[in-house]
Image (cartoon, rainbow, N blue to C red; front, side, top):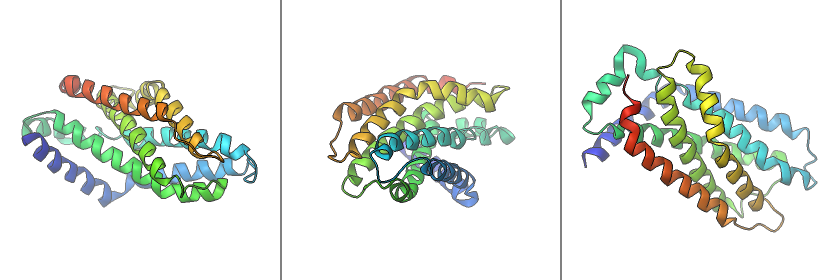
Length: 224
C-alpha cells in the first residue's frame, strides 16, 4: 500500500507541475502538428498511398515528439537536489519511476488522442470504426515508450551531454515499438480493417519485460 500511496502522491505532483506550465504538452502537440500538416501535402488523400505511408509518419512523429517530452523528466529533479529529497520521502524508489512513467504515458496518450481527428481529416483515414483498437495500440505503445524513456532519462540527466544522449539511447531501443505500432496501425487503416494480434502481443510483452527490469534495477539508476 505504501508503494501505491507514494506513487499517487508523486503522480499528483507531476500532473500539477505540467498542467500549471503546460510546457511539455504544448511543445509536443506543436511538433506533431507540424509534421502531420507538412507531410499531408505530399500525399493524395484519395489514394491508397496515404493509407500505406501515413501510419509510419504518424508513429515517427510520436517517437521524436516523445524524446522532447521525456528529456526534462528528471532534469527538473536536479534543481535544489530535489531527487535526493524524493528518495528520502518514499519507502520504495520504484514509486518515483512509477509516478513519472504514469504521468508520461498519460501525457503521450492525451497528445495522440487530441491529434488523431486532425490526422484522420488530413489523410482521409476513417478512425471511428476502429477507435477502440487504436486507443489500445496507443496505450501499449505509449506505455512502452514511457518505460524506456523514463529509465534512460534518469541516466542521461546526470550526464554532461544529456540533450544528445537521450535520443541516441532511446531511438534505437524503441525501434521495435515503432515497427510493431506502425504495422498494427496500418492494418487498422486498411480498407478491410483487421487486428494484427501478433503486433499487439509484442507491445504487451515489451511493456511487461521492460517494466519488470525497471522494477528490479530502477534503484541503481537513481544513484549519483
